[in-house]
Image 1: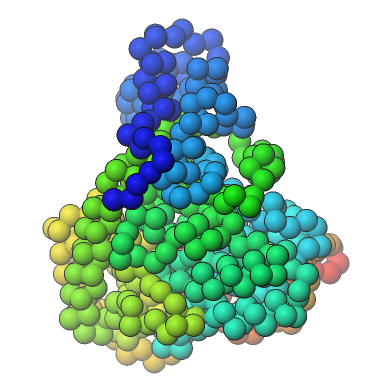
Image 2: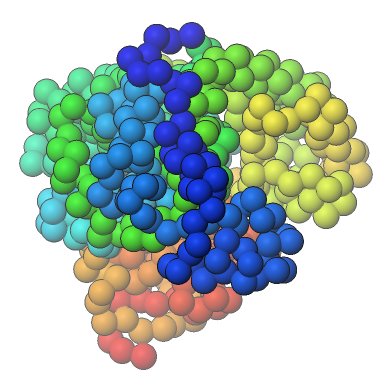
Length: 487
C-alpha cells in the first residue's frame, strides 16, 4: 500500500454530516422536503436516513464553490490519495470536469490537440470556449473496427504543424480500455510549453492497481478528470478534477463556477469522501481481485468460440501502449451479431445489464461488487446467446469509427444559421449539431464536420440495430441541422 502524507482514515465531510444529524437542526432552509418529512413517498423509497442529510450548504458543512473547512479538508485528502496537488469535488458528472479542463487551458480561438474519439463533453467544451480543435486521428483496429489511442509520432507531427497549440487532450483509457503512451506525450508537450489534459473517466482505479496502466497524474499530466462513480464506488454523477502543481487552483475554482451547480448535493459529496477513504485504505486489494475476476472472465469467454474478449495482446507500443484488463470488451461480429444486439438480448432475455454495445463490440464493467456467481452467469449467458442466435455476418457494418472532415470550428458551426434537412439527403453538407450513439457518447458527427454518404449509412445501420442515436434536435434523427440558411 502507498504511503500517504495525510491520515486517509479521516472522512471530514461524512463526520460533519453525522454531527449535523445528531444536532437535530430544525430546517427553515431548502430543500423543501425538510429532511424527508414533507415527502413521505420519497422518504419511503430512498430512506429517511438518506433524506436527513440531503441538505443545503451552511457554515458547519462548508460550501463547494468556496470551500474553507470540511470540504476543503476532504479535497486535500482526495488529492493526497490520488497523488495530485489539488482535487476538486465535482457533482455535475465528469462532463463538468472535462469542460473545466478545456475552459482553463484554452481561450477563444486558441488550439488544442486531441483525438477525435473523445466524449461529447470535450467537444461541447469547444463550443463553450471557442477553442479550435486540432484532431489527431487515432489508430484503428481493422478487425475490431474500433478507434485506438494516439501514437506519439502523430502527436509530434500535430505539434510541429501547430506549434501555437495550448494543450494536448488524451483519453486514459478509451471506453474499450486502450491507453496511449502518456508519459511520452507529457514529456513532448511540456517541452513545447503545452498542457496535458486527461479524460480519465474510466481510469479511476489506475491510481490503486499494481497491474493496471499508469494514472494520468503519475505520468505528469497537468489535469485529469476522474469518474469516481464509474469504478471508484461513489454515487452516480460524482467525480474528481485532479490538478498538478503547474495549475492555478484558484482559477480552476472560478472556471468550475461557470458550469457547476451552486446547490451541490451532500449525498454526492459525502459519497466521494467515503469512497476516497475506501480506495486509499483498500484499493490495492480491491483492484487485485477485480483484475483476477476480469482475466478469468476474459479467458472463459474466449473458450466459447466466435466471441473475442480482447486484452493485452493488442499492445503494439504505439496506438495501443497499454490496456486496462478490468474492461471486459468483447468483439461479437464473428457470430453475426452487433454488440448492441447482444447487449439487448442479455438484458431482455437473461436479466443482465452490460455497460454498452456498439456495432461490433460489447463492454461489461467488472468491479469489486461482482460475485463469482454473477460472472459465471454472464459467461454462460454469452455462450447461450451464441448458440441460439449465431448467424452469417454478411452485410454487417465493419467499423465503429469514421475519420471526420472538419470544415468549421464546433462553436462557429453550432451558433451559425442552420436549417433542417432530411438526414438521408444531407450528403455533402456541414453538420450543425451532434449525432452520437449513447453510450458511449463519442460523436459520429460534431458541429462543423462534413456529412458523407458513409456517415449517413452508419446512422441508418446503427438505428436499425437498436443503438440509441442522440444529439440531434429531431429526436427521431430523421432530420438533421446543417449550416447555412434558416428553417
